[in-house]
Length: 445
Image (cartoon, rainbow, N blue to C red; front, side, top):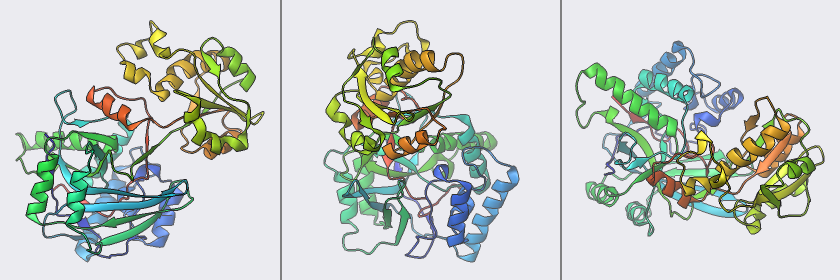
């Protein structure tokens, strides 16, 4: 049972917050942090990213300073805590590929659950220890959720969102902020409202009670919350009171069917390859792959990214920067990974998992074609660009010898695998755009 609760948020009191909020910590560099703080020294990045590079644990002093900054800002009124617990309707407006989108959801607290077949909160990707250690050190110091977990739920008619936003119809937002889109081509506008009416809150809780929640982004943040709760419980020497703050995590919940929710692909570029070319690749994979397009120039990759579904299931673009050529291939077999035996990485995997393009790329193309032919005896290295022109430019830089352009992972695959308690490979999805950090902070104390 999904337990959705209001919170008395810690927030900036200003209605215009463009200079105060930030993208999620894990997409920021040291220069990004400096740029945000140059705009305003009270930007939330000062607390949420106390150590760079992100995803790695830093010295204890960095987290202690972040906690002191948070406390000082609350005492000085830079941040203020709402008096009344509320749900916070949240809307992001953005443009992608020339089309305008409005994505609606809500900030709330969600009662923590351990992952498992009997639970109602489901991960979809694997996690790693480094980012969780960094976030746990920050949570220990600040006793707060500084940025939300991005959660999805099934609501074909968008009843939950419609009911919640009806309660703030014609109300001016509490806060508005504008951040650059991740592709740098436009902006994402975030708007925040507040609903403290107990009848509306109770209605939303009732509508959400029987739903399952799927973590779209923020797996490490959620895992950190579980670890933090375990630590606090151990220190307490007994189970925590039901309403203890450590029993909850800050979420933004968005319906899978929201018209503003889009999923973009995460492509791959590969390094440590020797002798890679389109012709050599096609020859190495001739028994497992079929070519389904004419040769295209590298400058055509942006259009190819949009056209990939036209070439059929599992079609993906293969880019050779030396010749500046790209071709589209797809597996000859309908279930190519199902034909492979004796691989522990594929043992017990469902057909739905085996049909993921990222799984086929990793376990068929990388492991059985690229690595033996172009990286024998050495470890390949990858990076994960999100748009085709990044694939092209990263390869043209000389650092990467091949690019792989994928189709997006369907949302239905995310739900299907979550319900089956199967985890997707790393970087299987890219829910666009990212949520803003700093509009709502949840105190755990």
